[in-house]
Image (tube, rainbow, N blue to C red):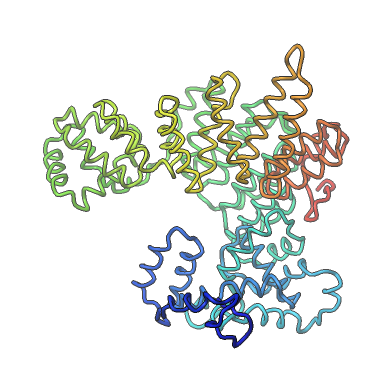
Length: 633
């Protein structure tokens, strides 16, 4: 409204450019909002704003003190304060916190970590001008200054003893995290952040999460150090990630890598889980016939590790050792294994249902009474109907045979309403068997916009006999943002060998989504065009102009998707390599790696070697924080 006025203090009733302002002002009304919303008010707001993630997030944040309107008003100014900060070191501290959250750190952030990590987000010139004694205190003060007296970039957290504010911990504003973290996708974290995490983070789970991210970025040594730091902090689950990383990077095939893992496994006190992880990894190498530096000891060591895990009561190790012995023809030894004791079975809310289906007359009578009431107990039974062993999933057939077919459909409906996919599939099958096709489709349609299985099933029931209805189902899924679900449904229709009508429909639909700017659709369309170009090249008299057009369009689509799509970067690297443009290929592979595609590391090495495959040893070491190749370590 203010922009409609000619000048400050001008009269909106005067004619001219603002002659309609007064009529608009007459429509305005004052809405009085409470300074603080109570729990019921926040619940109502969150329910009505459920379709807007930022509003529901504001409601969740306001539950601390009820200041909902204040948070909504402060959010734009808080983001502007960060984005256009005039305080370089303050912004660097907040950026370090954002990066930590983006990479998986969920706990409170130690000030020591932020102080050391923030240096990686300052230029050498800025670091040179810092006052060693005061820079972090000043930066923290800027980051903790609240906007509109409501919310700062960094906020305090409750002390561990539950009294007052922790002196050495802070938390990042959810507003900053939600809006700024996605903007930093694909930016390499500096070495200072990884080093600060290893030395200053105290939560083993946070270190484990960071290690997994470092591995995804092909920072193999950084990942190793973070996994070990997580183990040092008592996060025994980190050994599984360490074992996975050594397997994926082929380091487990080396004697040195095996010794490192064995040393770490020996210090674990986790009920044999780590021993089972390492033994299973070695077993898979043995089954695949992979080349390792310790071939003579591979099988004995595998058996030893799994046996030790069995002694510690690990059930997974028992199953793996049994499989390993059978594979060697040692069936007697496998059958002689003593399985670990089974833990007490948890209470099964659907036990009454399974007893009734098994023919227990008393249980059947009790189930009928529960079904008549349709109370909470009935809902609990239905919700748990398919959570037990798959061997018990045949209860609908058994219950009908036991003389209670009238209970099957209500139970399936209630289980479907609880979100159980198996129940939904059984209900659809039941309705189909009774030739109640519209009802079956209504069950699927109710969730097809958000459920992949329902969307795929319903679409293929409608296509091609009811094409308009099939298109409407896909359109509704697009409206709810389930683009990947839609592409999963359409992708098989684009394959060679499908009817021309199917391919034409699918490719047209994907093209529409691509034009609307959906990156996954752009990548899928590019893949389809490249496949078509490959098919044309195999013809006796290939149409070179058509092939060139398809390749050119595919390249343009991938270029459009690359800023926000990992696979687009990998594919662009492949295309550049096919054209012998190894410099560009290496650049694209680096960009793919920096957003988590560690599988492109061998391709990067090949591009750096001008198309020559890398040596086996080269793929073991990965990159440093800045993206440079590491020497052997």
